[in-house]
Image (cartoon, rainbow over all chains, first blue to last red; front, side):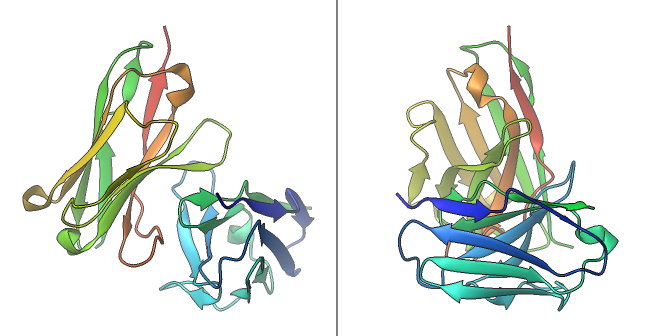
Length: 103
Length: 118
């Protein structure tokens, strides 16, 4: 069973800064990796699928990269609404999440 | 508008049963595989179960196998989760989520809270 490890657990940044989130798989998953954003009290929302494809309606400041075992979600310039928890996912496995909080 | 609306959550005693429903609208429900994903209070996301578009393929997490049953009714655009022999560790918000291709979860419902406590 694949294990997804996200780092860091918490990222403290200011609006306008760049956020870089990591997701590492225990074995190669090719490009089959997705990213979700979850705000408090809300359902998760799909951001990125197949490692680098933005879902419908997702702003261009969100980008995904990587393949094999190492993946990155980048938010180029944080907006106030981007402070949330982010999860990576491969098939039935989710990472433990990275919380992006306001510094 | 694409929408998934869950219902049926609530407080139940250990060993009890509950049936969750998820009503879909705004997309071709019968073309999507459907899933249940749960989130215990303050914790991360856990996949629970999946069912293919025609109900031919069904999968469960080991943690619920033998206790939970997923089903769907394409004529009613509805997904269900029958939960039996509930345990305290089943306490969570249960989300239904659609899958058009691969195992990418989109869209998601707003979730329904299941609390298992005496």
